[in-house]
Length: 195
Image (cartoon, rainbow, N blue to C red; front, side, top):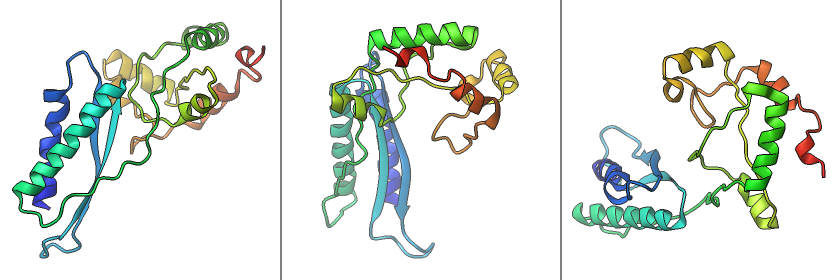
């Protein structure tokens, strides 16, 4: 367990010390599983990490750093066995097509008015782009707000949207049924689906 803790601490330096300031990377240790009792030293630990980057080069840099750090910490701790690495749930970069995005943004602005706002780059892990990428099709990805509008306005006025508005995959994400459901289906057959 001490080894797992040391790995987690050391991994916290990857983004701050190894990724260039102009690049974006997120490295999250989302799960640690080790041991079954408080008085027994575990013989193994499983760490699950999530890596999100905007470029393949930065992704490679981060993955190489993870392997280097885990191996070094295992060696420093005298592990009898080399660590195992398994990559799963790998998704391509979600990179919206410019023309498709302009079309959807224009339609959203026409339909939703000032409620349609750009969100900028996000570092979410998303499998959405797998479908379009495999078909060679243009795509655009958008968000539908799911929080009570008054709660959002309070967070916006306080400058605390990032802290107070839970998003997908957050333990506190719980969209309100209304107006979320109506907003999501309100455009009916939207104009950007028509040719």
